[in-house]
Length: 462
Image 1: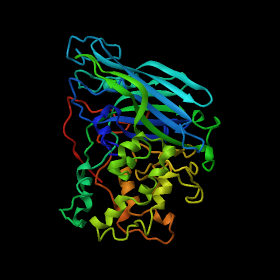
Image 2: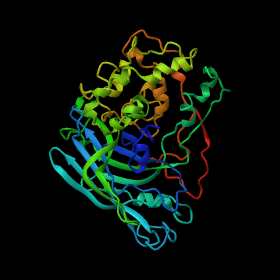
Image 3: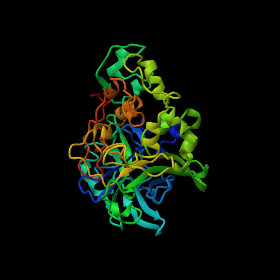
Image 4: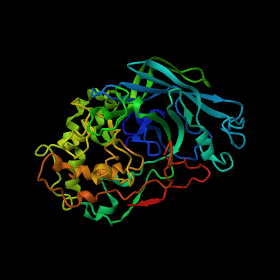
């Protein structure tokens, strides 16, 4: 849901659809930062015979701003190439795949990585790097974790990369939220009451995505190559967002041949903070928002200060959420600052992730904040400064965070003395983290679900 099928055009182009972005200090090696961009939403694991794959005609990029201008100072670019060993069969594999070199694996992808920065220009960091196969099942991919681990590549600059299928790391009850903003645990309080239930239905459980992941030295991300150790130093903060682009023209070929693309590259999807285009931007502007650069986001600023979800909450839950701050009487400058500018020093003691005065949608990470020894899924609003909106970890419960923020839990930061509704800090959609556990090492997202073992998703509890 953070950006799954969030705009009319990109919902018809899933291989280019950016679904989630994560940025966090790597917990197993704090000299590094991990950046993850997910694409291709809602993959049913049993996807044969044509299993999911990255687009050979799509350019995928992870962008970093490190000098407070909301413009890309570092860009990592990924391009993919598909290879079919035997076009005479309809099968993805013709036997077990036990290694990345097995000839039984018929349809495979490799990728190349480039880094551009203002000092060095464009450098190729890796060429023809392997993607793992998808997780077909116990006969075809009997030791999938090993195949995925073997697909982690070290790049020429000392960074590490991975590109391939992962288990979905995001949990959300899409069925209830888009049914007139119903939250199952609070359904009895709605103006359209239904029997209450503490059990949410995780729509995304037991499905997969495709991930592009980088593990990069912090010193390769700061503006001056320094190691960020001072939380209050502006140089410790970076802004991160991911994009996808296609060439301007696609020309149909003869039957049986792939279309031919031509012309300049055009950005068709982007994502920094979760849920912005999904929930903040109106339907008429969503495709346009996807085409824009973060430095141009001032044109969308009013959708933050006058957040539609915040205005709907007290209408749908008039008793429990009476008093949620709404524009125009109470413009949501708290949301505007936290998501559009970053938190300046002096607001939260000993913390800041401010990126300057340019309003922009970027995932802001203060790299000097160490990983938490006791991570809290509610991140910063629960006192865990290593969690969202200071970057974003896969375990962060961004749905509950957004619901609580929309209901006013951080509004006292900009309006001292304001008292949020008592229910604001309890809001959630009743889901929990994914059924498959997160990994403790790179690339951290869960092992993808097997097509053979696939069953419809179970419920999750808050």
